Image (cartoon, rainbow, N blue to C red; front, side):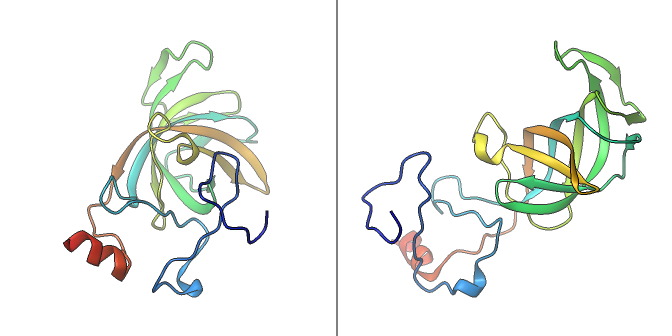
Length: 167
């Protein structure tokens, strides 16, 4: 299946492709390819996620900045604000604006990536909507993205995509 010509890729296939006028040096882990005319991929300014703390020795509060593993991206994200502590099983709000969360707790958290990162709400696109929180060489929490605020900057489109957009 390596270096074979495919007419289509289906879920579960690991597919590679070439892009005209883009050097291999310009492509990095975490980059996302999308249709420039139909909901193009953009970096997230911030996002709200439901996070379940699984294995953290202390308390997590606003300002905590662990590494998030989301799709192939591996980027530090700051827990900007803990908005709600919620019951893991029912999803009901237990506390508004908690000061901290600890192992076993679930919370709604506003997060801000330290570098450009492409994420989506889990309901819109599941593979870009779930993540693991890693710290101290272990997974300390997992999460699902509920909503995303995108950066309004222009995305980096290839020359051929720009030409196609003018037609």
